[in-house]
Image (cartoon, rainbow, N blue to C red):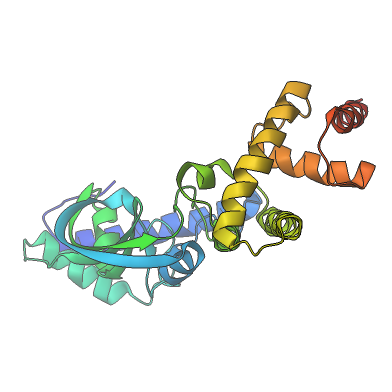
Length: 285
């Protein structure tokens, strides 16, 4: 807990030492518990935006921001951990000087943040954010600029999550679904998005040959979703195939791959689903 003895310099020194101990304990706990290496790593703004695909920005201005929503940094990813605890003692002097000034009641300018979804990334004011956390402050004044992205940042908790987001963004550039259709395609494996994109593109190529005309990516995506994806998922659900797969996209991937492996044809009929159901039942046994 933060303490207030009435001696700003001493309290600031205590707060910094406490945060450093917490950071070291968290690092050791991560190692002993064999947690992912990036569990306590601060989120890097540039990599997050690159994975999501920036589409624009809006300057919002001065706001009161929840400190707990500040999870990343633009350029200080080595100096602080995910919870803005100092990762070394080299910044001790400046950190304690700012902390002591705040405790004496001196005015402190708002920090500058980027907003991506519900997350905030520090442009300027890393020490002030760290001090706010040390003092158990729940909010902080900030100048905020919101970054708009191609795909949702929901689900990003660590840098390792960016791989999945990056592959999803690439998938939607190759298969430009929008709105509810895009939301319906959720996969847990990053490289599954690449495999599904190839599947859709091959389906679109066969359709173009059948029609004798060129189809744009947007048209292929729209027709694939309505003429291939939805009917196949409905038939698979009715057939009771792979009830353990709650994601429609995961189910489609499984039946599409197994269909071709078993029958070597690009058709969907009752015989195909009978074979798929039998194969699925044998795998469970």
